[in-house]
Length: 459
Ligand SMILES: *Cc1c(COP(=O)(O)O)cnc(C)c1O
Image 1 (cartoon, rainbow, N blue to C red):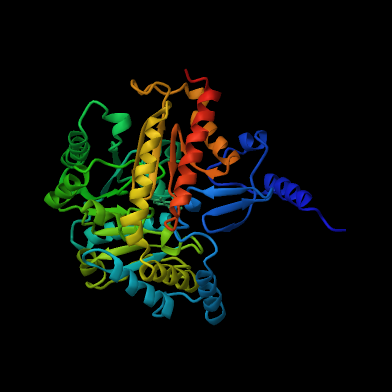
Image 2 (image 1 turned 45 degrees about the horizontal axis):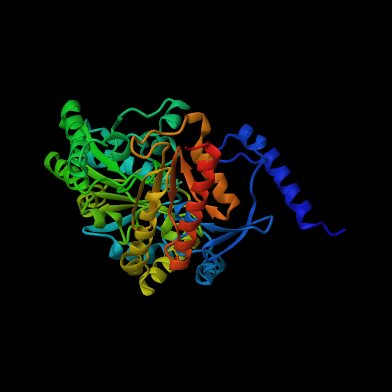
């Protein structure tokens, strides 16, 4: 008997409900809302679900499918590598060509004095690695009491215990005894929520100086590092004022603490530069990457290590007692190598900076005219809109209305993936988006804001 596609989808959905525990998901609520949407294939900037619906992927998967879906070169790179050498480790004095070549290419593409890379399987593991590197660095410097890492509220640095500790998501901390000792958080540079009455320049300086206050409060002899995303992603695409990062840099320089840029989202073209640090003039000592490095086709992440840290942690000798079975997985490295070469050879980053981002920024800004939008901000190819009930007072809709979720559901129903973070809607379209895709994204967003307004009873 030939099973119909519909029956097959229904069976899968039911099986998913019975057996598959999803990340960051309320399964009771999911069941009540009719269960999961099954994505069966994808091409370019579109994904297709089991009902045959074509949906514009405004999030590039989860901020990662930067080259879009269906790039045959990436598929071929994986297949070739899997045939030749599907796996070998880089422990015990061994290595393999893909990891070597990718290390070299990353050293070439990265800013300033970065010449070493430690591979991981994910962004979370990259940040756990940073914690280990930071502690090792100060230990070898003869200052083991420099243990405290300063991070920010509402930051996202991953979901392992280390990543979740560095992150500033209270919902994650509450479900464990987190953060682990030695990690503290300062307030974030989120002007729409926290600094509406200040100029952007003043607000940026004020929020950066919280770092200095925290260093002085703890004592510089106890502070090891500061970590931040150049633009906070999962927290709601929070773009700091221009005055913020230079002041953070000044403070890190003045007190000699390590500066870690978590570039898991912002690296590899998202902000129109190979690294977001370049856009903001940040000179980090350590950089975390993942996501876009392989365009999401296979899992890969890592820590880029500057000469300042390498000269101590690597050059001085002694074993760095840290590593993952899949550190530098050959197939993942081969795919990343191909993805980065495509980006370089096709000028993807330049095109984002010179064309796609300016076009997106201009069209996205138009959403600020919508009656329930309090702010529309964007930088490079990330954007956010703040949904409000009252434009001028920035009053939000009642929490119980959950208008962000409402808007997201309207988007999906109308063929657009846009993510909700509370009542903030965010996008991160593939870097290879054409103008027509940007038009489709913004036009659909506007329409879904109309539907949201009507449904929420906006006056
Ligand atoms: C996604 C993300 C991470 C975690 O990466 P995983 O691969 O999910 O472990 C860390 N930092 C930032 C900034 C991220 O966006």
